[in-house]
Image 1 (cartoon, rainbow, N blue to C red):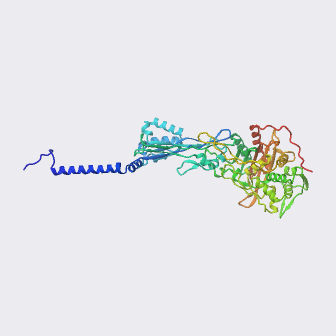
Image 2 (image 1 turned 180 degrees about the vertical axis):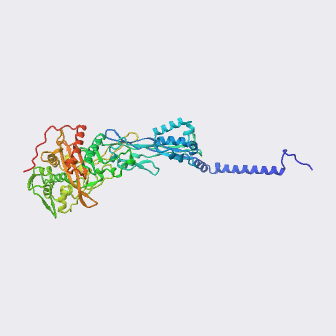
Image 3 (image 1 turned 90 degrees about the horizontal axis):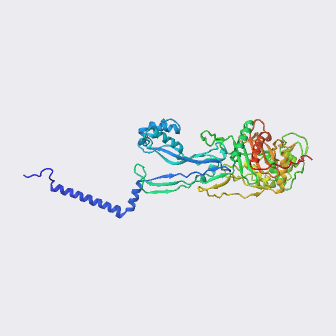
Length: 590
């Protein structure tokens, strides 16, 4: 029996089987190749590309916010999001964690978990790390050993971080950012950051690229970029230096009177531009963790209050505009006055006296004001108050503005009496400041604004909507009210101590009973002072309000000192020339 030696070949049957297997494999491979390349090549190419396609957001840079002189109030600085590949960082976790804790805060143990996390090649370490901080981290990692060995597992992606160089300066106006769903501070939460969030934020871009299964970008792979559209930058009407002065002056009067809070508004009468809007207590926008919620609101626009005697300026303007009074109108002022079942008195007791209209305003007589208001139809008074902007938002470019409440023409007589001297209605500080500014501006009202200009990411101007000025009283009525308001700061006036060095000024004190919504009763006082200068042609107005002071409660003594300090700084700063004439001697009695 013959046999085939080992290693010299196989049986014919085995060879045939092998050939058949090879032929079948070839046929199947060919069929698959024909299917992929011939029948549906695009679908399979798309599927292959999808398997290695990655995308990452390209964050837009948020627009900057500056004051009227270009001083930065809020800006976005370069930052990175730091992530780890635990496969690479795990063996060196202790060293890396110590360095991260040194620059990012916390203790090394805080970083060990993401650096050693199992079954993943991606772990977030921290978002929005300032770029210069990460440069320091990389430097220390390089010193600790081979840079590739220690830093090779750390990755970064571009981001930005919002900074507020002024800290507390205008923080209630500028606002801050809040965290989005990814834990990134990029959404406006308060103030201007919130009201103009969409324009400031811009629009993120995206990069789509091909990568290896490990996530590494393929150098010659497909790469598509949709660029980010950076946000609009705004120049505000605020003056950072004047704002700081107003904040310091306000802090002093609130603390010294032991009040709940206060605010101050400084306005350019001729344009409606807000030069300063101070709040106290306030907060540090660069230290949000320690900010108290009740100190973050902008009370100058969000809080409504009964205006007290500042309202008399509006009542007198309506009377003068309707031809019901002149500065020399004679008024008999009794010691008290009945109004329904109420008795109206003045802040200081007196017998029957005879005052001119100027004297009524200068001495802030509630009784005399009501006597004159009763000569005017109620519908006429209400129409003027509405035209002054009461009961409606001013439209300033800030969030959280209250509308207050203005009376209707059907108000009863006793309500008309109360409204005439500042009770029975509610206003915001900005509403009242804007109304008085309009009366003093030859009777022309300018809608208050906080925006001076805007530019896009390329520095090109962006249009800003502006409301048209409107007439609220005649020039003659404006001149009469201005004359009577100057008497407030003269001899015998309630604001006699509010004279400004080198400038004639107009003013009005306010010592309003404070309505408490919880109890439904009047509790305490709200002290206020509003004024402008120079009296010959008012340019700048300042309104200071102090809520519920304990140490004193008169507007002239509580709020007045802040008014004087702010105005003495603002007038020369804006090139307002000192008065060349002396204030006329006003006739207060007849």
